[in-house]
Image (tube, rainbow, N blue to C red):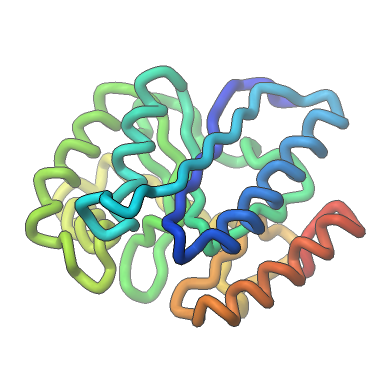
Length: 211
């Protein structure tokens, strides 16, 4: 059973509070199931983004990831409109080497920053610094920080590893028995909540989401 320590994190503003509640439950249920099987080492950190945060809320993830990487070897970010439905251990299948600073998925628009596994080290710090330097250019882009990651990926692909989309950041039509995380970008908040509530019911009843 894996015991390598790491942190799962997410954050939301007041407009996404229900999403935050549902996303958080999926993560806490996963940690409980891992611990029941003898696993350990998973910490969950969530934050509510203040009303006076100066940037679009999606940019807050960079600050939280940087903060957590200062004291943790591995950090998994999950957008608040996503849920962890893995029946095993979310650590399985990732590269934990500091030489692989960031692992994430592609979608039709490029790399997607909705789910990201970070490994502590000099390379991760440099990557975060580059994204911060791009922030003024992409601050209000329709894809916010994801647009900055795509810019950087085109220039520094060696700092990125691509995870299997249908496993690590599956959209509704990509769900399969191996899916670890399901994500609903582009849905209305109301539709997201309905879909997330259905997944939570599955987790409560069966120990896993609905595939």
